[in-house]
Length: 499
Image (cartoon, rainbow, N blue to C red):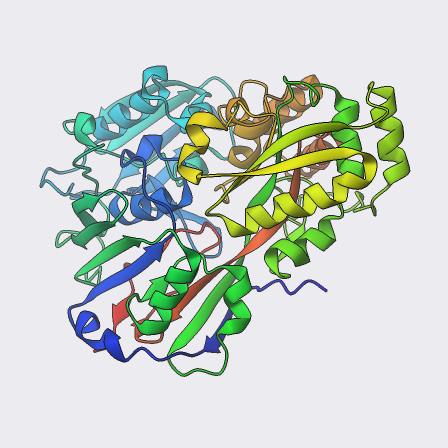
């Protein structure tokens, strides 16, 4: 039975006698599992990087913990009746960390930089509807779109779409400057990042902390030990297998929330054997997603068909999670020219244990149909260079996006930026659905389009998204005001530390 944690706080415990001196300094220590490869927010691609981005930078809009979109650097916005002209009014007096005041030219520069293919930002596709962007006056920015787009303001809350200073854009990879509650101090790759309080943050009285230190601790066991000993204050993304470990202690609590974050098996649709839809369908017919939720997440999630989670109103409830059908799988394989099955390697990220468990489970399930998978553990840091968009078959996962469009269009449209790094999927029906959904502001029509989207994805199997996962953080009880977010970044501006 699935045990999905929904905005639930559990109390667990451990001895943290050594923690007091660091807590008294007002610097919160967070442990993450992977080193940051990129400090330029437009170019970030992994969850550990997104934590830093959220602390140092702001977007025009932001996503509240309840997943609603609120003003951030823009204090308001309006749209024309045809949804093709959008005007944003900026907050007056917001300062970048180097002291200069934010103005509309910074927004124009940021957007043009993301749209420039030379920048290499994955968010370029999210802004593909932008025809022009103009600074109307120092605090007003106007966008002209080439299509009606109802959710345009929402996309500026996404991770890579953070506003950067036009005069410092070339230095972001070494000396990042934003407007966020914390300022960059230092970065030691593979070891730690140090951030300090922004004394000029535009939300008065915030942040409460003097600083944040992100510690890179690759081994899960070492992160758990650091939480237990008090060497860290927050363990981001607590391994699911450790949830039951922390019970009945007065010093550590688990803070968890349901999310649209997903893991899945990525299939290269341009490389044999997965360039044949029948082979992809055969693999899907061997998979028991509900069993994988238990095996990989220890029940902390729900099976799904796409990045649209079962909790979303657009989820297609007419689709069913069928039990494995090995006879069907063998028939499809025979039709595709593999009557005796085939051998294939599958890469899994060795530091992401839940994804390793997904890979092992899929290997064991597929074997019954003659699909013989060799699981290869690969360092996560090398995925972007050696695995993504290249390997025949691998396990990966992606964090929640601010809108349905940004969760789907970049990943499934034939021209989508993430699609080119994943399954290289091309399906005219999907392109048509996603393009039409961007143009309509009618809620019932959008719901119908996205339900159809899920049905086509389930039929054509670009890859196998197994589940939407809960997000669990381990938190020392001396940390006050912390709440986990469905976007998996850390909201720390309201957080304080008890002495």
